[in-house]
Image (cartoon, rainbow over all chains, first blue to last red):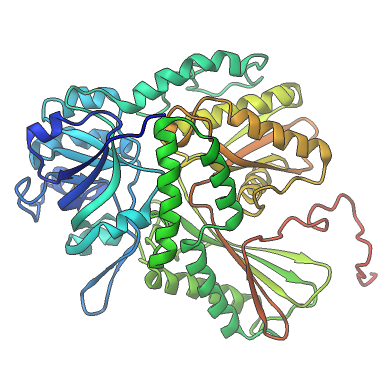
Amino acid sequence: MTKPRKIRLSTTPSPEDLAALKLGDIVYLDGLMYTAREGVYMRALEERANIPMELPRDSAANFHCSPAATINPDGTFRMGAVTATSSFRFAKWIGEWLEKSGAKLIIGKGGMAPEVYRKHFVPHGAIFLTTVGYGTGALLGRGVENVEAVHWREELGLAQAMWVLKCNEMGPFIVASDLEGNCLFERENAKIAPGYAALYEGTKPAVMKRYGETDDRSDEVIG
Amino acid sequence: MTPISLIQSTAETLMDKAAIEIPDDYLTGLKKAAEVEDGDLSSFVLQAMLENYEAAKEDRRAMCGDTGCPRWYVKMGNEAQVEGGPCALETALRRATANATNGVPLRPNRVHPLWRTDHDNNVGINAPEIEFAFEPEGAWIDLTTVHKGGLFGTDYRMLFPSDGLEGIRRFYLDTLIAFGKRGLACQPAIIGIGLGGSKDTCMVLGKRAACLRTVGDRNPDPKIAAMEEEFIELGNSIGMGAMGFVGKSMVIDCHIEVGYCHTGGMQMSMHAFCLSSRRACARIHADGRVEYRTDPQWFTPYLRRETVEWEGLSVAAE
């Protein structure tokens, strides 16, 4: 068993930094990161609201996250645990978001479909980092040095607001896609798939079928 | 008579414990899985989770950023009495949920399904769920909170007697594989299976099987216990591990609960209690003593009773 490589990376990484990353590398982040998920995407892309940060100068790292955090009566923030939400659900916005925000790191849970990497990530020189577990909420919470701001808190609520986090060796994350659009989860699925036939031997489909089903276990039922 | 203030303060402590402290039975199960896991990435993931549990306890912060949907299971001895009655009890649990959401803090996950209204306190219409059960003897009240992750790893299917055991195996594998890819189910998990009942009962039984029984516990029916053991083995032989990486740790334990169903059907539900299997319990005795534990002791012989009468229970005749 080989141990994965561990690498520290800036949240405003250079193209060379990104080119050096391999699928399965373990990454720890330094710098500013912002949370943005469906609420922020809809507000910025569909309602055309002005993004309250200078992107990607301030940060090129978009985290699909709602933190377990609260705002104190004096306006300061208390950050508890931090983990990501499943990213495949944000495919419809990601191309336009990469274009508009200049993000180079999309950080979330479980990566996105390989076609999304090839169509949107590769042309924008971006990669996907997945959280680990899931989820190592306490470890990631330790990596948040400070909450710099919470934008759109009134408009979107605490869970969907745009949290700006200052990260200090925040991790672990795993490299789930590279600059060529290779997909870690696709690679793992392909290794597991040959065993399915033996696993299902002797079973037969349910007597009553359901619409829209697949019997191909190599098919991912997402996206 | 149990004072309502004691119920609320105990409930607040339970909210904190559930979010922060991984129960010992799950931790022991995961450590065993980590010892045998030989996939490079799966193994790294399990080690990271073990470190994470320690970090959560040291820092007193929630173990996972998605703190799930808090819910309550209340069990009362037949002689238990609550100050203010059952409605006061429900109010105390709703208050405790809201206070702990800001106190721990937890993520305010609960929103209106259509308007996405968020009260930022995990309380709303029909939330948190509060479910009740009773035991024939005692004046105690057991409070259990479970903070179950909400989105993946759960499914239901109406199977029929002609689908047989093979049909159950197939749906079990289908659900593990569909939600196991990319680790959406946050496995390795405690898998709960509900069989029979009606659709709603089947879902309830499966969820309780996952959340209210501890790792290592077996169903008292020896044939069902054998199925549970077979299913642990089957799930761990898929070739998949944590996060859907190549590995062998999908299932920490499998619990099956049954309910009598329509003669033509064989309902089945599947539930996955994830890497953050959050549950905490306390017994509040009539004299005010509070004992904390992590085993809900929910499924008792009385709860699984087979027939009409229950020995030792005196019910007034009509």
